[in-house]
Image (cartoon, rainbow, N blue to C red; front, side, top):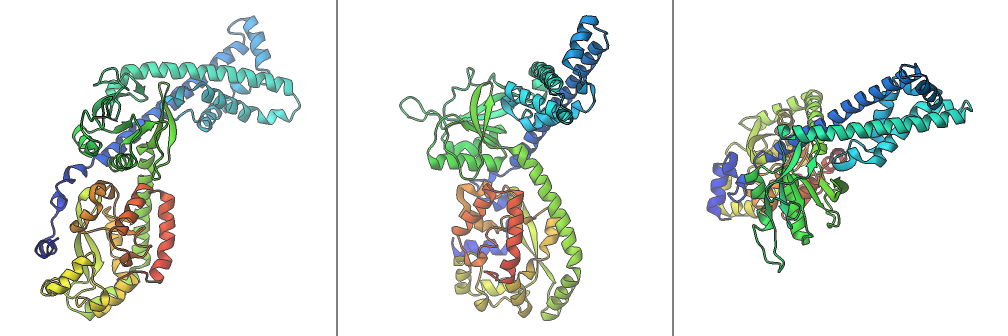
Length: 504
């Protein structure tokens, strides 16, 4: 980066998409958030429909057994029903929540073929029977309990399987109303008989519609279409929400596919023998009898993001209230120490590349930018030191600013950014547009989460850790992000701040 271009960037920070390199500008649109919402809605519809169908089914089974026991279906049926259900616990309303709970434990509400897996449904019915009949085991009437347990398992599992079959038939007819899953195939396209539409179905009306492919090679290993590196562009152009890997990939290509799926909120399915990626937790998924490994689950990420936003809002609000006396004292000190505003806002890149004003207590003199640009040697050091200067040679810092920087107290106003939804309590540190070059092809992944007040780099040495190590740390956080990881980083922030590790 030349001195002239760097100085221009400092003087007039770009905003919006203009702040992003042209090579990735189209890849950081809101597709990630859109796809995560889409998968969450489909998953919610799937679970809601299955639960409703199960409630109706179990209620119908109860009604039929009650009619049989009461003789409405004839004396012979009544005698058999009385023999099969001597305790009659299946006639209680408690059997409805017991069945739902049993099916949850058995995993019969999972994606793919799990909902119609006979073993899971029978296991759920067995658990429901044990839940309801457990208290009667201690009466010693083991024969009656065993007979009713067997009958309960038989009627409930049969009813649920018939219900699931009927729901599948209904969904196959109503599926187009929900819109198909838009799929990009990586590698072999043999998943489809018709290259434009797959006949396999997933629940909630998401028929798989192939909208493109990358990394396809012929029998001689020669590429016959776009390379794997075009995956991000293709996701953006086709609005795809699912990526299926159909053949083994080299490790760098596979890591690239995982990063693109994470950044774009796509569900990623791979052949069961695909190499495991360290950043994701695989789990088996069956789609119409074919085994896949599900590597990214956007619908699970959706509720975690909602929880993260709730924690951010409550934490920021509580922090501003509790710390208000300290904030007021710092504001008075900054104002008395040097002329200028108390709070300084600087343009930084946020989620999806949107720029925002990142707030800090002013730690520099009002003419700090002029002082920096007036000294070419100092500015060169600033650029070479990853857009920072060691505090001992930085003439821009005020007396109050040196202390605030060393203790990280200058960043407390970012609680307002968190409250506004521009930042998170934990996340990658916000960067200036010029720093995005250090993230290369992983820039869309880096920009897929909100920046944070603290994060992996912030607690691991901060300014003492430069690029490319910083980029690796931040990307690893994004790949492995979870609420538990956030809580761990918050706990590590306290000793890092007290020890003033890398803060300047």
